[in-house]
Length: 362
Ligand SMILES: *Cc1c(COP(=O)(O)O)cnc(C)c1O
Image (cartoon, rainbow, N blue to C red; front, side):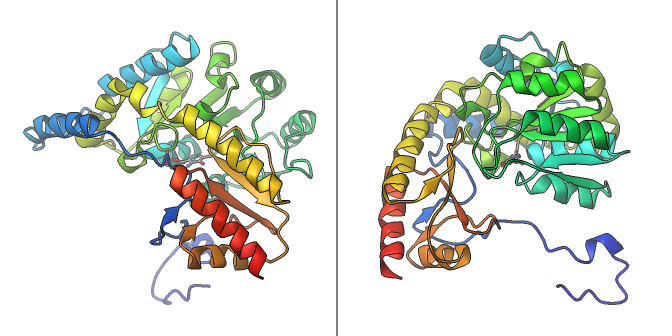
């Protein structure tokens, strides 16, 4: 544990924490943070650069505090995907969906927050930093979500915020929109559906529930399928009352003019940016089959990563052995499991051959 100096008046509840973050290490195959492995095309890079150089001429001024153009475009994007009729009043944009999560805690963390673990570790961590009491809800042994049990847990604890991550990170499994609707129908508080990997899943998005159930709010991001992690752009789709509350807790001008400009251009290139999703899904299924052939267990995944087990050495040891051979995957802290992000063809091949070597050698 970090030894903080006595003179430093750090909050008591932060003293025991370590900074979050997957190791950012050099490797031949970087397969640990669920990014899309395919870089933007030169044409898109040029379109972004052109737009940014226009905006650069006005950087003496603050950006549009309400990011209306970007939020309008995001609404159009979601409407195109889900057949909804949202406008800017239903959309909020921020520096990654992590900032969205933080804003939700700041606005609605007056009670407790509940999530079903194992799930995205930033949910409890941001709860801690914003001083909201976090409740660990449970899943089945195989990490799938038991909907009736989830409903009882929510009804018992009455959290003001309940998190459902689908497809779930780190397990990759998804719940159906009917299951989310059942939860929404029988519970109150805000039901936060974190859809960071939605584009990889065949399930209908929970954005289609918002009209009927205004307490359903949906978090999306450009960091994963959308292949735009470096820009830091996440967004929230919700009833306008929820968005109004975001205005209360946001910092003034939180989204830079450069981020807004890049995001707007990216949405014009959405077909290119999402063009690799089908490929990644096919590759995911192929890598999953290869892992199964090697005698490993793989949780069925609706995302761009796989959680696997069945190797007979400690996760940390296999993780290190892989890294020593140039393949960076993720130890998510689940005993006996490791997670791999689907990469490009060369990375996937390197992953499989390296894993076979590591498991054969020990
Ligand atoms: C990666 C991830 C996010 C965060 O993404 P940002 O880059 O902050 O938009 C949010 N939720 C889940 C479940 C994730 O896996």
